[in-house]
Length: 233
Image (tube, rainbow, N blue to C red):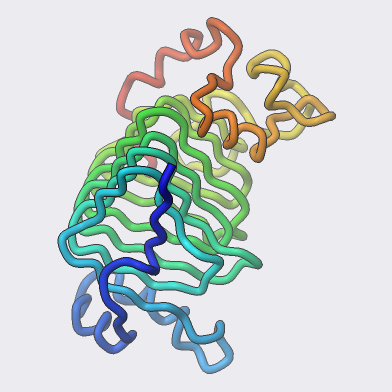
């Protein structure tokens, strides 16, 4: 399946151009992370007009990067928004975001001026408080799997089964707790568990990309709240 990289799309820009495009925008302050004198190395800056409609997978490089998408972002396959070594990454989508499966993590901060629709599974990992997926609309996914320091927010509420550490939310409690106590065998297919009996995110993401279910039969139906809209703030 073809993979498009966001940093190869649209046209090269500067942070000054981004400031001009985002002047008085509530996300303009996010650019400060890339402008600190002792901050990250020079970053890739792209502006993509008209949106992105990826016929396969869409991903990002290792960072740092800043991508402004003036339109929706769609991937018919897997959408991977990531950085390596906790380098910063910023993606602003001025429209809806749609993908079959989605993962984000490390220093990636993703702000969607619309709704997020994930047909199957959504994953967020690592981050040290920097990994964020935030929508001004609603967020829908079959299930969302979050590690420590990775967060999802949606002003219009979340409709998803939530697997996350307890205490990471102000008003939304996880349906299944991700506390690393080896109780994954009661919820997940053995093929996506680590040797301690907890969900292995690497195996789970690959299974999701392959179109395999992560849950044991009947588990999802035990959590009817996944079908309702729940506030994240």
